[in-house]
Length: 145
Image 1 (cartoon, rainbow, N blue to C red):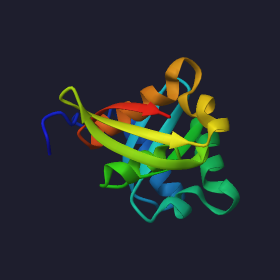
Image 2 (image 1 turned 45 degrees about the horizontal axis):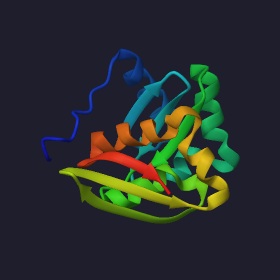
Image 3 (image 1 turned 120 degrees about the horizontal axis):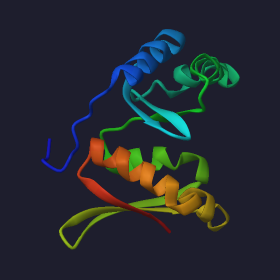
Image 4 (image 1 turned 60 degrees about the vertical axis):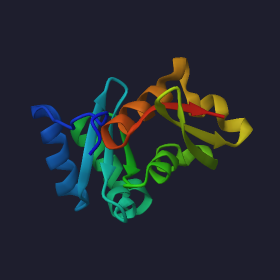
């Protein structure tokens, strides 16, 4: 992979989270990002429904077990698709990836009424998206339009 892609490494806590998540859901975890507000699991392509479970029951079980909010995103090797999956719940209209000032930049266009929520308080969701994209692609800058 390109040099700009961050190495994905896990600590003891995230390894426990991954093990528990895979045991409960029977879905393969590609990545786990532990941030103060929640734990984000990236699951292998095609395994999002299995990971979430009927009516979200698997997410609820994992969340109750680790006593943290849990968010599940379907991984994709295609950067455009991964960005779309990260912002899935905000009604994505388009994803554009381009080079700006020697930096790979992804722009996610969402429905106008969802723009503020997609960005998040103080850009929190953009920061999370940027972190995930840097770990799995050459994209190091993300914006919402």
